[in-house]
Structure formats: C-alpha cells, structure tokens
Length: 273
Image 1 (cartoon, rainbow, N blue to C red):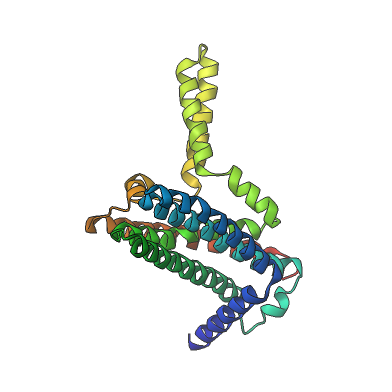
Image 2 (image 1 turned 180 degrees about the vertical axis):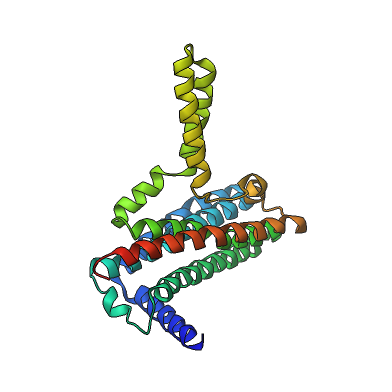
C-alpha cells in the first residue's frame, strides 16, 4: 500500500507539472481567462446601474462555468496526449499499474477544479466586500456543490476519450446528454396519446421506453438540480440544504467509479499499451 501511495503521489505531481508546461493547456487557459475578462465588462455595467448583487452573481456563475470547462479540458488533453503519442508504455511500467496512473489523472483534475472553484469563491467574497453586499452562505454552498459534481463531467469525458478522439468525445457527450433523451421521452409519451392506430401506438410506446432507459442510464451533470436551483440564483441557503452536497458527493462517487472502471477496461484493450 505504501508503494502504491508513493506511485500515486509521484504521478499526481507529474500531472500537475504537465499541466503547467503543456502549451495547449496554457493556450486554453489564456482563452478562458480572456473570456472571463469579457465577463467583467457587463459586471461593471450592472454595478454602475446599482444592481451590484446581480453583477456578483453573474461573474460568480460565469466563472464557475468556465472553470468546469477548463477542468474537464485538462483531463482530456492529458489522457489524449499519452494515447496519441503512444507513450503510455513509458509511463506505465510494471511497478506502476494502469489503474494507479489513471486514478492520478482523476485526482489531479479534482485538485485543479477544486482550487479554481475556491479561488472563484474568494473572488466573489472580495466583490461582496468591495460593493458592501452581505456575504451570502449560498455562495459557499454553490462552490461545494460545483466541487462535488465537476468530476461527473470529468469522468464521463475521460471515459469517452479512452475510446474516441477528444473532438468526437466532446460531440458525443453533447449529443448524449440526459436532457436530450428526456425531451425525446416526453415527445414519445405525447405521441403515444395521439397515435391513431394500435401499431403506431405500440411503436411510440417502444421508443418511449427506450428513451427513458437511455435517459436513466446516462449521467446527470447537475444532480438534485431542482433542489439547488434556487440557491444558485439567490445565494440563499439554509443549514438543512447542505445535505444535498452530501447526496451530490455520493452520486458523483458512484458515477466516477463506474466510468473509471470503463475507461480502465478500454485503455487495457488498446494494443499500444
């Protein structure tokens, strides 16, 4: 166990150095920072009009969205770099199992995401102090929630990248969103009621069941969203609401573990590993 811990720690440090030195990661970070800079312009306009709370809310929400993209992006780039350059054999030697190396990628991505979400929270607190707005506990709640659920998208894209090219993986993730199949499920449910013939009704009923099963099988990137949506918009959170953080962590742990095992399976099947 001590040997595995040393290997895991060494791989995590190596990944963090890789993120720091990789030019593509740096370019992506610069693009994201530029987009964040553009977000500040509407914030200044809101602040000038006197709606300072909306300005802080907008910046905090936009930054969280960009941080999620950047966190998932560094994981995809790291995995694809080693697959594309066929250097996993150099990374994974007998003393370092594949699962240890892959787990280090997950942990490294979590560290990057959590650090950026916490920095965004501190920025929001600083803006509240600057504009003399009461610091709302909901900001801390949303930060913890984002830290809890960011690994859902991360593990889903890491799994897809273990099979497809990153571009195809991203398109697949967008097309196979749970909301897409839920919408199709509702459409088929409506068509069942409108079907004139028994054959048509049976056909739409079959599609309804298929879309519902696919919807249930796909990961939900915002678990318990109905319960936390209000907190995201007004930053008002009670102590009892923090139970959804625990629920989200549990859901994320199960989903991440499932896609970790799938990614591990497909990486083992690649001939150049």
